[in-house]
Image (tube, rainbow, N blue to C red; front, side, top):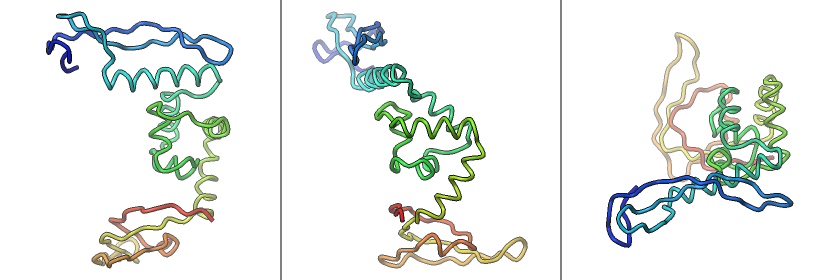
Length: 190
């Protein structure tokens, strides 16, 4: 946990207390972390505790509003066998959306919440979203060096290509190829 900035002691104790947080027409009871120096008894909230406290408040507000919490989203996404990047591509919200939802940095919209719940209840819809996402958005990738294979099975052969300055490749060009070592630069929806 570090040390006390007042006296320099490394004897820091961590505590959690339930604090009232006013939200809309109600008061939420949220567990909040803080630290106390065993030497000088100074109370403080460390940077990581601030992040966790903010996430706890956001999750309490989500629960009050009937939305999935960060841990709910992690569980749901895992059960759907999606990583954060693919979930962002399929459901929207931006490249880092699911990382932020899951860490409690950002609250998902009600429509995002409904879409996640719907796909959880009907996992076959994820395949529909994959098909729709493939048609409605294109990856723009900057090639940093790649290997391309046009064959299949036993006849598969790989060609290695060095990166060209400013070389941009549209993902639709690779529908029948396998490509290694690409960096996604941006998503374009069309």
